[in-house]
Amino acid sequence: MQVELMYQNAYTLGRIRLAGGEQVRVEAASMVGMSGGVTLETKATGGFMQSLKRSLLGGESFFQNVYTAPGEGGDVLVAPSLPGDLTILDITEPMLVQSGSYVASAMGVEIDSKWGGSKSFFGTGGGLFMLRAQGTGQMVVSSYGAIHEITLAAGQLFTIDTGHLVALPESMPFQTRSIGGMKTFLFSGEGFVVDLRGPGKFLIQTRSQDQFLSWLIPKLPQSSSSSS
Image (cartoon, rainbow, N blue to C red; front, side, top):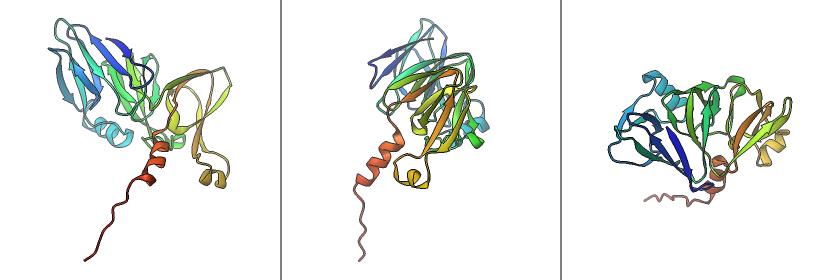
């Protein structure tokens, strides 16, 4: 499996090149196109209960699509629903990925939802849940806006609005909290943040879907009902 990212950093398109008989797992509705001979099978990946948990708690589709290349190989084009970027993660250790960012992965990568408990990521599309990726292989993830990588030295602290976090190693220590006092929390436009501590690297996105919806929804026309 080879992934080529085209038209970065906005409206990025991913081309996944498969060898003969090779397979790739793609999130539902993320396929843009595929070459001749590539076949599609829709599965409840990991069984019914794991798929249900990923769908209800992780914000991902219940079903995932598995594409298989013919003997001569083939291409699958993928893209996210929101305008933004794609990046490739080489999974060698467990990673936590923002709900809604998962696009595609090699068959050797297992995707599951993970209970956040006291380390919940409030403000993300997944609420109390993020996706956990483990195994070995490449994974394609998306962002709303551009993707920015931040590297922390040992003990270094960095604070991120939860709606901007895309992915981090599961081993990286983090703590979610509200920012400032009650007045700041209610009126500053900031809600929950996450403190991450190095060493390690993590990915953020330059825009927040939640913030965009908070700006957009009040501007939408309101339906009016008339009584006879």
